Amino acid sequence: MNSSSKPLLLIVGLSALALLGGGLYLQIVEKMLPCPLCVLQRYAFALVAVFCLLGVVMRRGAHGFFSACALLSAIAGAAVAGWHMWIKANPTVACGIDPLETSLNTIFPAKLFPLMFKADGLCTMEYAPIWRLSIPQWSLLWFLIFAVTLTFVFLQRKQSRAYRDA
Image 1 (cartoon, rainbow, N blue to C red):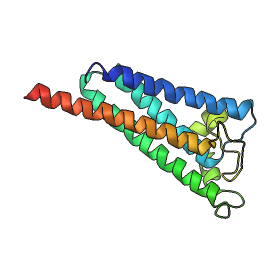
Image 2 (spheres, rainbow, N blue to C red):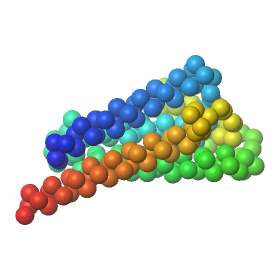
Image 3 (cartoon, helix red, strand yellow):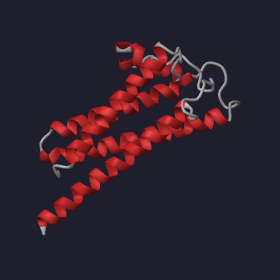
């Protein structure tokens, strides 16, 4: 892996951790309860962070694998954020207790760290926008930034390997 890729992976990983911290701030201080889709986005941010940070510390051969896993996590997070935005635009889709909430709250991370991974809110709940964007819009924006950056890292790795093999 090109040496310039490690700082990018580190920045993406630390940014994803910072966004998780921001989510906790909104939950604890601002009393914005996370819905099941918010929790799925938190899982995606956590996976992006873990894979990026593993990509930084692992040996040369594993960097591509971890950057690809982080990229897939960012794409999955963007898909969930996009779905969340669609649900908010069509609030009649979700009503009552969400079966996804019940499922998410029974898995291991939700029991180990319920403050971060327990879903308590409704996906259609409207909170005041932050700098004119809703939480799902911010998530989508960050997942897209991560996906573009990680695509660059992944392609840079392939390009440096092709240059080295030539």
